[in-house]
Image (cartoon, rainbow, N blue to C red):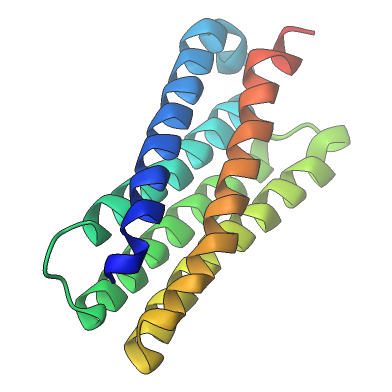
Length: 160
């Protein structure tokens, strides 16, 4: 797992910075977001995704950890992130105006793309060892893409 150290350090920094961006966006746009509960839930989903990357990467930086322990952590963190973001997405689906319903479905789908690879990474690490961690790369990239789209929406689009 030592060869993954720099990757996880980078992920902690990137995810923490993006958590800050979403938090700033929420504070700047809160009055507008309150009028659109589906966007507030979407921002919450992005925070959950980024916190999952942050927490997962932080846990995997713990020294002396076995691949088996890492696999368990990944399965649990990925499952929690998947459940929470999916629930937020479907809750937002109930309040989204009809013209934006397709966007909400896309947001739900992208959160699947971001969270399911984390669970797969955990299962693969448990079954095959550290090589399973490669599944984290597409999951983390998807989490960043989703969060950046959502940051754009809460910082720019909500003010139009």
